[in-house]
Image (cartoon, rainbow, N blue to C red; front, side, top):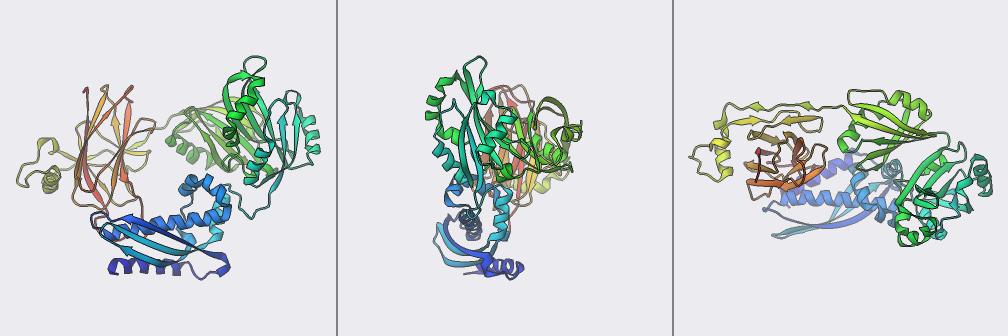
Length: 521
């Protein structure tokens, strides 16, 4: 099989031994197979890719076994991004391996530790197939015609059992009537109330809301909203017949969790942050505001849009008590409370953050790079370095997050290096009032990495993506702006494969030159 296979098997054996002996009842075996292409005769890389693909697939099979196939299929994409813990694999056996000139086939059996998988799924809010169903009540406004059986079936998938269903009038509902309805439902811990959202004029409706209300404290644990264009109230039935699946999609794992129905002692705060709209801002808010706050037991992002982000915050404190400590001006944000109603708060967020700059440094000994530059440009090794590539600047470090960037000027030639598949470089480009951006990108020397260049606007919205093909050493990239050119742009260089556990061998880095300019063309 060769040295590469032996090293892979040795790493798997070592990985298995470090986990220690486990009770056989805690493990379960699963089988999977895959076929991957062999590129540039790199069998080692193909085998590493096959092992990585199969590890992920085996873990996903374990996940599907725990939560049920239907719930898994519905959330497959989400779970593939969330469940990546290789520590659940205790032992691997190669069932079959074969290769030809173009592809490699691999079949494995793996034994998984199911307890860590269970813990991960519970942290994500997924009910397990073995969990008992939580009894709940269902209250539907008498003006909304809904197929109750389909709602019950949908909730049953989430291990929520409708104990009883009643009709009511949301127009006259108060706390005393709600308590009476709960008694008629059989006193469940919580109920879902489905009612219309009034429009701007009498008799008009502009949406439907589904609220989770707990009997212990009459708190709204969750508020799900389906918005649509205003229409007459008597047209709701027609709309729902055509859009029933859209309405039922409100009842998802991400929106409804068992803690909403059973966590009566823990207060839930529904927080909408207007203006917190991009990943960078959300990351800063979570890291600098939510996580350091000791009054907050847990939180989760429940919704994001181009206008706001919504969080569900768990705490023993009330919303007003939390607001006093959370909405203090910081180095990154200032806050203005817009509305407060019960445990729901809407806040305007103004970002005040600026990233740390790691400026590039001039390289004095350019001739050391002469041979690699000429080879990448396809020139004779005795030729002089073209003037446009003659003055180099080494990227500033650190520059691998949105808070630590390397600023780059137009026509400045940057020498960058990805030190591994897990590394990435992020550059800040000042925008210009010209409609075309031109980027020249050179690969210096050999590399087994598969680098990717991505362009983002000032809010980190993706504008374009360009892979560097393994067989090519240079790219001339052109991007035309359709609207106004942002004041700032971000360029990100990273490996599109990402980190591979147990990967060995040379050329696992990537050196490159990068420059850009704007044009009116």
